[in-house]
Length: 97
Image (cartoon, rainbow, N blue to C red):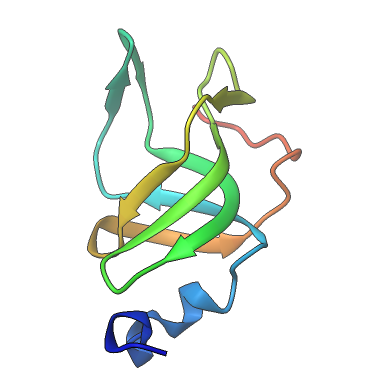
């Protein structure tokens, strides 16, 4: 294992969830992709963890008008911008109002 593969202790909780479905909420008030404004709520399988980012693949963006929109590529999130992170069933519906 090289030094770049070593996960810092404070990031180990993310690494322990590799391969599991999680809910991620970032600290942005709202985001915009392809002209669609939405709250920063994502659900997906943790595929990669580094000491700066986690990557979800596949990832579902939980939008009000399309609660199961599957984004076509993996998405990476800076760990310091994540406000909520928990194991979660991505098929579950949640209110986004």
